Image 1 (spheres, rainbow over the protein chains, first blue to last red):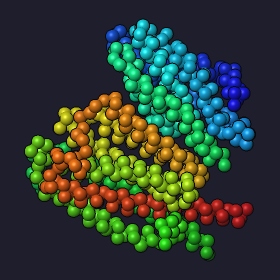
Image 2: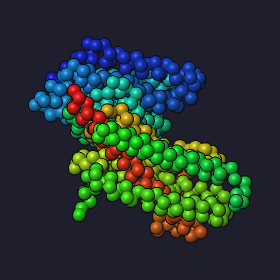
Image 3: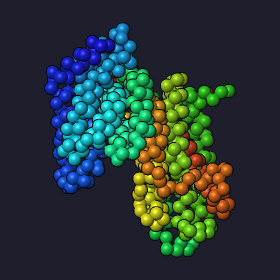
Image 4: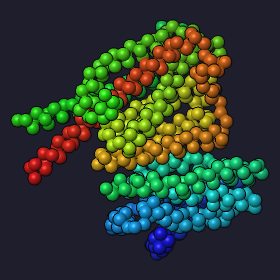
Length: 218
Length: 49
Length: 244
């Protein structure tokens, strides 16, 4: 399982798509927002946590369709199904690798990009905390969506349609936690609920994803 | 026709939209039912011949 | 004689074919009573004026919109556990009806909200939840249509329905947490003091019964369609195999 995780990691780094692409996409979104709503610093600072959360969510979505697709095409996935490793473990390892290549760099880069939107000091800490707690759920929920659409030719758009509604609770609690922390309010409740969603997704969704993969490969 | 007062437009619009949507799903279901029945009959008849 | 006998497609077709016309007429009758009574013969509310008549559309549609998803969840579970094809196809048949009801609930709500709240749309928990429910229906239907093999599609949509139900419930709480709303509480609960009065209540019951019957009729009809088209696909496949 660890080997599989490392393999996925090195594959996505070598392909160049992993770290770089998601971060570049994130940067573009952050750049485009002031163009679309205007450069007032106060307004930007106010919507910054929401924008960064939305950017992280979209950047995460961008790379999801490749999560299983490549292994499905060259037959690796068929081998993994018959391997002694349980399929749930395969899904978990791949989702985790996805998080390390998208969610983790986005979280670490968020304060830097936040500066562009006038987000500084304490606010950045709250943002990073909420992203660190929330983005693993995005990868695991996305893994479920990718497992559902793995056999489809043009699954990308369908994948977004399936996954985005599932992201609603994570997005709400994540952005709420960041916004409350920034405003100096008590952010413990949304943070606790956010971690709850993440932990439950980590624990339970690999089973659903594995069931979907089995149905797809039958 | 009851006197709907100043909200006549809203009430009629709500009933209009609802009836159109309901008629739409009913018509679609009936159309699909007829078509599937016809296709199946034609195929099974062709099978016997 | 057990319920599972209806899981046999042939038996289901025979029984549903006999029941369907009666159900259709009963639906038309009940719906007509509820809506005509509601539209022509109920007084205006002292605060809401004639817009109170929209309740006969809005409340039943919203109830069906939620319960249709519940029915799909049960049907999906039956498919996953007992592999009855009729069940999977019934879930598929119910989705477009549920989507239509969600659209009706949203549209009538917006039309009512414009004069009453002064806006078509607010990001109120109930309204937002319905919008999210609408997205879930769209995704579910899109997944069914995207996959060619019916059994695989049934498996995947059932799994999506289960996971989706959990997330839909989560969204409901998340949305509540996120924004307290304008929408009044349930006006039909048994213990509430501010229940709607009888003048409105009885036609509303007819309208609700009518919508429930309409849902049943449409689901039966659409399930029959699904079974037929599935049989057609199977027959064509068999013929192609025979000729090959």
